[in-house]
Length: 114
Image 1 (tube, rainbow, N blue to C red):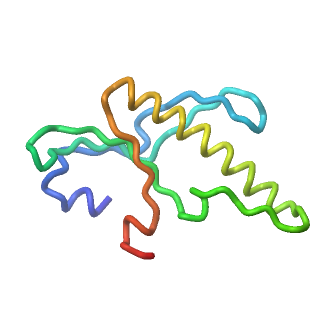
Image 2: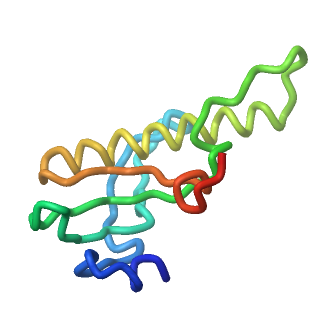
């Protein structure tokens, strides 16, 4: 949030302002997803863009590797990943409809870590 406040290109931003319905692949029920940020900015061409941003640890943005012995931890990570994919698909659909961009930011993008 400090990076948003300090960036002169960012005109305004909000946190968890929008509810997006999605179907959970785990319980097959409808839920609401609240993306972390909605950001309006002026790009290098001087055009105003809207970004929907989700912030996640890098580990949660990739499918967990199946171990030799399936553990409860793996099952939980797999469920979390599948729910995240459903949320992100729903967010992309909303953004596409509105002409916005959806981005997932991890510590790699935020802090420049490899």
